[in-house]
Length: 402
Image 1 (cartoon, helix red, strand yellow):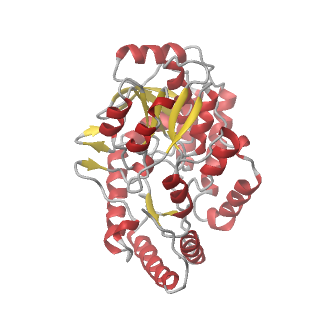
Image 2: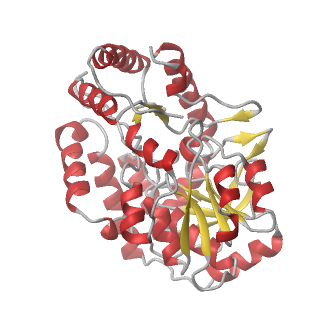
């Protein structure tokens, strides 16, 4: 491979820049909505993080309202809960889906006022189980990674009280920022819309700055610049910038640049999803690992395969395999590995989620996005299998995974 294969898809070209800018500089249409197939009309907003804040505000919880959230999740969700004036209550996850455990939610039900159910990696929460446990307590579905996933033909986002979506770079649509809100109940949608009407509108200067920043960041996260300098800058950023300064929760209407690109990319989404599912199937059929290390679709579910997580039996094995792949110019991600430390430092987490803590230290994401060509998939599989053979030949202590 001539350059580092990125683990994420930051698909944004010069053509996208001008297309988005054209929308940004045209007359603002701040009441424009987004139609998501098989879900319905959604309200666009600045980001997925902003959508969480708005959804919580629409619930009219008491100040400090207690919101159940899986410990194993993007810590930006914790920040959004705090921004809404609420308090996160951390819930453990299921090992086979990386999603919230209905059993642990039941144990903590008396400690909560609402639930955020995150469909992790495009896998799906046990929504029927969560709804049965929560009963009258509202559930917000976080569909930032599950656009297109369904249970018994019902799309993720259509089970709970409300749903939020994210179109941020690195997600399925990868437009820069951008998010959306959905509720089946017309009264809830009206309440969301009423709150949004009081939000600020990004200026044209902000639109232009955002479009240019999105283009630069995307170039640094794609080949060839990612291997030359982008990955190094990203590591420095993560090592030197504190959590409190990362991913700020900006409350405003959606940037017109992001709205225009979102609508355009939604028309191509089915093709992208099918390609990414095919890539995941290829890995499942060709990686020489134990079946319990990967996620399989449960009966009557359809996963969008946003990411391809692999669960190792120890930190050492995961890190050794990641190092081997990086030497072979294959990037990987150790997603949310610091979630427990961040939850403890900033939000008072004091334990109680053992599966989430273990998973955070032992899961690895390999590239599986739709832009990968077949020869690249073959290369990744061959390198992974050779690296795994080397790693498993070494005497490394395993963690017990129950």
